[in-house]
Image (cartoon, rainbow over the protein chains, first blue to last red):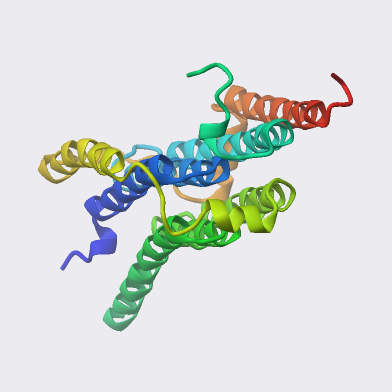
Length: 106
Length: 174
């Protein structure tokens, strides 16, 4: 009997849940930091997908692991940059609500 | 032997439950710090899934980078940015854009679910290498050497950029 943890579909559905939840949460959050947290969910869902394909379908299992490592590194760099941007926005506008930051009327 | 397989299966579902509850907790949190704790729980669940996928090294990296770096950065950002009373007021139970969010989620999830369930995934004909850290390190420093250097440059640029932007925000350099 093939258990769910040995099937590719299970991991893909978990990755899909993280992507969809990240999109949902990014639209619904009212602060920049909440949106940043949602983007972390999306990036981790992508990493989980890479690892699942790597485990079940890939020729060389090192490739998917390296890709996932890069996704983690990029997520950390992105978090550091965005946090500093949020700090700057907070000092300028005294708010981290996206609706208050609208000098360009976008 | 069968017994241990089922125990591993139960642990697998516990990890998936951790992802699910972490996600829901981060969405429904009243304070931003609780949202970060939900994110940490979900990242720990993802680390467990990495372990199930045969890579203890990446599970460890996920704990170190995901929880150790990203969540700490977020916690520092929350501690320095909003004042607690503002935070409670801003992040109350009411959030916005619910219809838009539901439509966006359905538009993304329905095609992807149909694709995932309807596709036959053929396994690789030949498998070379293994999941060991040794093989991973050799690949990282030979075949993927350029990407390895690139990610270090990206990290350096991100750190310098973050420092510069945060400094400009104080108004001293303006």
